[in-house]
Image (cartoon, rainbow, N blue to C red):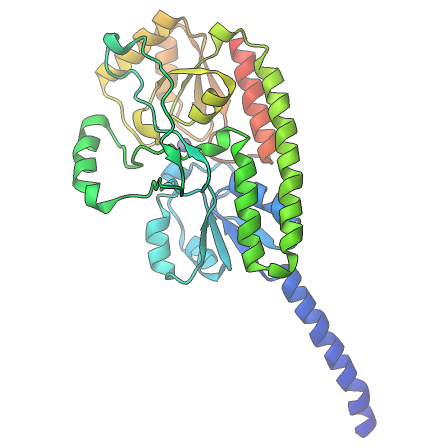
Length: 341
Ligand SMILES: [Zn+2]
């Protein structure tokens, strides 16, 4: 018995040690709300953490309704990464359900935020006013973009007037400018360093490596965009998500089919007629509809105005045809360049 114990005890010790090693390697679970965010986070994690996306490929974040399973996953997570600016509109209810002990990291802090534009749903007089909107400020540095309940009554009155507009004025689609992903990577590295200080340096190094890939991507996309003559760099998309791309690569957003930046917005017949008139007046060759959104309106406008409809832009999510953020940006830019050049 004595002998057996002498043999067993060191064995048990070894088993416990390796179990704790495994714990530190794989048992920290990070949930990122979208597949784009999860991909950037996986690059920063370098396999040290278990990083999962809450929403699946091809999901439309604006219309997403969390399941009971989603609530369970968030409740068990060690960290929740969010884009912020109320982009994850569904999260309010979800976090109420699972309690407030899940730490949440807002990873868009430090990024210069653009407002949703006032594109021409106003009629002919506004037709040629396409000035680029001034940035609202730097998120987290004097600028907050979360829902402000004090202004809710005001917002509701305005929403009745202009269609759904519950995002305030901040446009959360910051990932459409690749340079913003350097800030995401750096913020994610700091969140991971706080969660797992033993690997802090590795996370920061991984973020720098990823930033170098982003820089190369930016160069590649700039070269692709250069194939489109400047005066043809005009975008009309289904919902408003291309402002960061447009501002960075020199495109004009002539109109969006849906006002207000969410895929759930509605348009009245007069607004629809205005968009059709605008497409005809500008001679825009293509209207872009997003894969995750209903292309019906874009198709209607295209058929009325003689433009082509290209319904293969990806806006909120990765997909089988673009399984990484780098692929997502390459595929979108190639789609735009092929339609407009
Ligand atoms: Zn969107």
